[in-house]
Image (cartoon, rainbow, N blue to C red):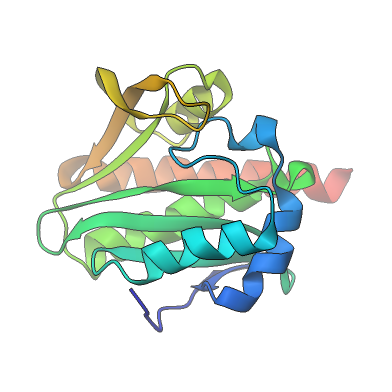
Amino acid sequence: MFHDVTLTRNSVTLRPERIDDSFRLHSLIDPAMWAGMAAPFPTTVEEFQQLQRSTFDADDVMNFAVEYHGDVVGRTSFYGIIPGLRTDVGSTFYARDMQGTHVNATAKLLLMDYAFNTLNVERVALRCDSRNTRSHHAILKLGATFEGRMRRFRPASDGTIADVDYFSVIREEWPQVQQQLEQRVDTLMSRTHNE
């Protein structure tokens, strides 16, 4: 869906993803990075734009370009949005040099705050292909609870049917998760500034 939501904390901004972001976003991805996604790897900018358009047209999806100091360094999304009940956060990827930095933790902090306090959801879910151990561990570090593995849940980018690991944060857990995320962001930011 087209939206006008912009979320900012420190040097990280989430703003509506636009079709003209496709050139930069496509330059950030490679087949190994894309392996956990449901859609086949977009080998061209045009294929990436087709994927963008399909989500722009969905009424339960909000895509965000993630900027760091004004440069697009990734993307993330809300999908399956049911205001007052739930949303998923996903379709996330970052430039390789941004992985493991405070950028993802900051983006998740902004998204969850918006989900719980503006969309008024009861739950935010996150999921990843069960083979993507990097994402699995990253989601746990965000403070989400591992709920289990959905076997043969969805098509994978490699043409197989993937098992998916499911995680969530519910409303009652949000204050503690928020505090942990804020501390994580501060810790990761201090590491970035010390390098």
